[in-house]
Length: 274
Image (cartoon, rainbow, N blue to C red; front, side, top):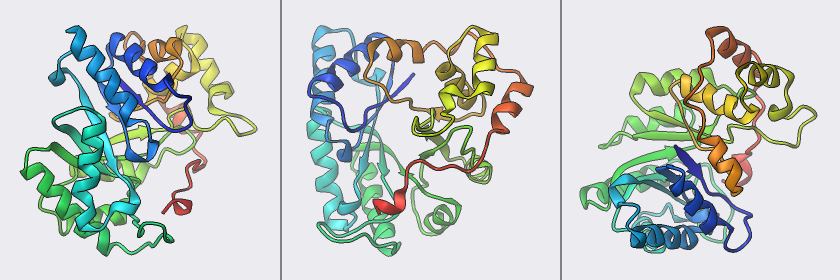
């Protein structure tokens, strides 16, 4: 199972959440420099390693290159800082957080040239054995095509916003055709809507039929579409609940009903962050 650790968590909450998740059997932990909590995550790893209840090769740890470190000379130092904070010797996957970089303390730019040079430096991290795979995040089809035309190591994954209100069928099919694993963040959408996904009547109806929560149905929706999912939570009960999604199966009709909710509503505005 997978866990996303993001921003805006009180001190100590992230470490506790990771410990609960690891005890519950989570293996994929999604991190990022931008989340500013990698030191707490690293402390949780070390505690569990020290207890002898967890081995490094049982974990799949992901971090991300933030937008202000796209200059080739900044890539490896940024990576090593994350690696140090996470108290690890290597990462399983390192993602370019966004296709659009910007100089430190300056405005974003949509130029792709820096990102392509950044990718070449990320490839060297694989050569050095510091990370097993490299990938991207928030890339659309045209951006992926541009990267694939010049890369030496193909991106292993593309992490993007995906949920029934934003199904992105063209991107899903393109990534599958290229052997790029899709990782869905924000699988529950955003609560700041007239009808949040977790309260959507269609989602609730399907959940009641299976004796599951709406959150579990939304996670299962992605699993059956062949998409990895990283639900975000620091609440212990919810972390455990989000892992209980392998004992039921959505019907083809139910998948179609959920896909029918698509309205191309995007909650994470990446043009505001670069």
